[in-house]
Length: 235
Image (cartoon, rainbow, N blue to C red; front, side, top):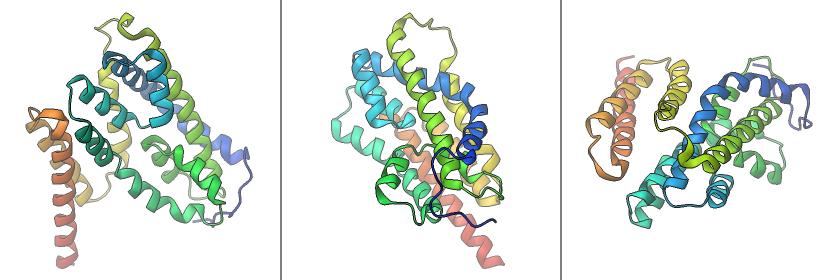
C-alpha cells in the first residue's frame, strides 16, 4: 500500500476522487434520509426540529431508532442507551481509520469525525491501494454523504405526511446497508456473524423497542468471535 501523506491539502484531486467514489451510493442514501425525516415528523417533531435533529445527531440508524422509540413513548434512558449501542460501531470505525489520520491536527480530526458514516467509512476503506491522500479521499466521500443526507432529511421532514404511503421508501434502509455489507464479507467468521445477526434479529422481531436489533448484533458478534477463535486454534 502507498504510504499516506500526513497533511493532504483540502480539495485536492483526492477529494474529488472520494466524491466520485461515493456518488453511486446516492440513490440508496436519498430515500433512506427521507425516511429519517419523515420518521422524525411522525414522532412529533416540527420540520425545523427534525432538520436540526439531523444536523446535530447525524446518525441515520440512530435517528430512525430514536424517532421510533419516541413514537412508542419509550423511556428516555432506553432511547439514549439504544442509540449509544447502535453507534458503538463508529468507535470501531474510528480505531481502524486512526492510522490514516496520523499528523492531522486535532481540530481537523474532530471535524472529520463528525462526518463519519457507514457509507463514508466503506468508501474510504475500499479506496484504491494506490490512493496517496486517504484523508482527502475520505473528506470528499464524507462531504457528499453529508450533503445528500441533510438534503434528503429536509425533504422528508418538509413533505412529511404528503409523501404517498405506498412509496416503498422503507426498503431503502435495509437495502442501503446490505449494499455496504455484502462486499466486505470476505471471511467465514464475517459471513457467519452476519447470517446469525440477521436470523436472530428477524426471529426476535416481536421484542419491544427494537431490542431485536441489539440482540441480533450481540449474537452475531459472539458467534463471529467464536468461529474466529476456533479457526485460530485449528490452524
